[in-house]
Length: 251
Image 1 (cartoon, rainbow, N blue to C red):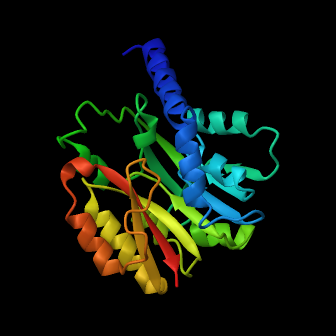
Image 2: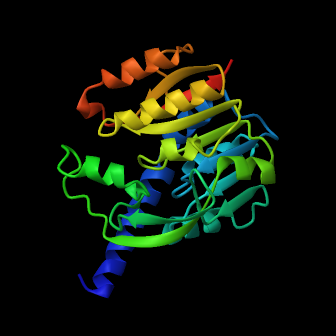
């Protein structure tokens, strides 16, 4: 593909993300109802893997201050544009990981929402049903920080959202203290990542868990179940379930 073709593909992928994640008001309302269980006016929230900032926008609608992490230039530009006059949102062009430094980030120009720093995730996606045609066509080097470093710099958040395409367990490895509440994405092609996330949180404190499938923005159980119960639930999901977000609260 020529340079012009690559640019067009990237812009088309970015436009699709903006339409999907910012174009559905009903989805926004459902998201706000869900997040209101964890985020109150004046709270601090971290949005790790912010993409085009739909979750960050929800936290801001609820009156929270937001620190958003997004390493990709295009999505970061969308966030910068949407929140250019909002002093309560801080955008960081970096990734979260288990240590501060630098890491290699694989970009999917046509579908930037699945760009990732996880080679394990790329291996799981290769040949998987429902992932046909996904191409990670570029590599960039990006700075990395840790959740511990973010807490030290900005304070303890009331809520942390982590959506980093199979890198969630590495992000949580950079956390050494329990936080009040958080969510992390999982996919059915990489369920073991979710299991490691649950084990990490259990090592940090007493957490209860629930899950919202896909983009439903609705918790499945309506109560906080154990980590072992949540791992069993995720392992029992059909492949077609594809993805969801596990929510965890410190009890």
